[in-house]
Image 1 (cartoon, rainbow over the protein chains, first blue to last red):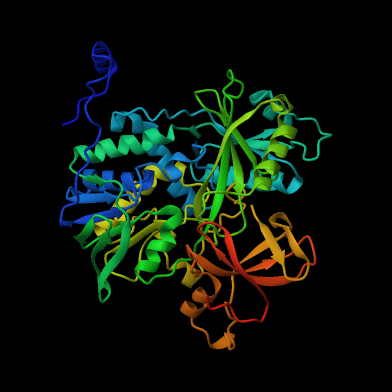
Image 2: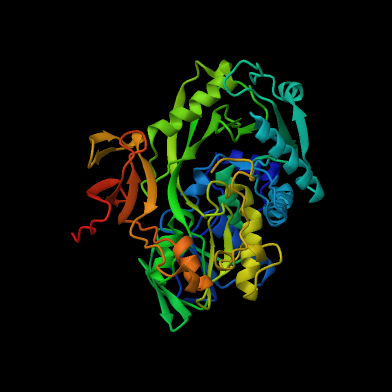
Length: 417
Length: 91
């Protein structure tokens, strides 16, 4: 049983110099057999394990992670959460996640620092204006809060934006989702890990999957760096490395893995109290609670697993940032990094069964998976437990690339991919 | 970010090039006879290899010619560059 985190436990532990906090999760050796194994200990994988244990009564499960939990894309993203997607299927998926985010800190008894500071998407040309207005209407029909702002309203909501009509890509308007915002990415992984561990889930770090054992079209287990683990159900949540794991099972996925970069500035006093994204010039920025500007750049166009992107991608993003926010012109950037994102041809994720019985994939989140973490875990857990997708993720099956029933969020998703 | 030795122009900055994805995916010879599964395989399914991968590149801001490359995607090291129509290197 985990001790409850509260102001009193903080006070109590302060008296012993914070040296006697209870371990948040154990460090077990893998058992011989589990009812299900989740491959990948990022936010999505840990959330999947958490909901499998909590809602589907599957406690004899494990999460295997080749590095440390939350050390991949969970710790590398720009922490933006929103659900203002165009198509009905996406709106259902992402708003399901947003609703869970709203009560997540209480549910996990772990402060994920979810902050509904709003996300504003800018329009820089007439086509942007038409697209964003259309998306605003589509969002409202799906019960998702969205408003369209004209240039003056954009300026009022975020006064540091340069709304001069003389710049190369002038701000013609924007959309605002007030329920959207940010969360602390590490805390999401840690909170889910702690919650899952409490219910008996084994979180096994430094354990890389080497092969998937099959008998005919049924999975039998996984060979790992810590030995063979027998299981009937394998849920793969390996983000950029999904294709690598799929190849072990003899499957091909419609994915390309590419480096996506982000960077943060030196910390400064509060200057931007929302998240502003721009599709056309590809720049998005928010400010962390530490005061750093968190800036998201784009993906490179070539496949790479190197976690390093090209310099010109960062340069292009900073050009756009400086035109929109001249006030940042003398800021210094502290850190820059890359993560490997797995991108689907239709820029929508895959949460699906496969042609192999007992093998499930949750992948293809591309450049925007963090926002969906709780919803993705919940729906993937449902899919694994019932061997059938939930109605909210039914459209995100692997077979859509055969049937042609794609969920084409390229461009429509309000962010460049 | 790396340098690419264009077979027509010589060594140039990667910024001048456009990646064209996996190479040697053959266009179906009889498209009308293809099943949906075969179309999916041709259009969408990719090896997405971590390791040495054969891929197409275009010198978009140079000679604008296409060529092939063998590149290790785990560290971006270029192993070989060869022209369109040529067989991939075996080593």
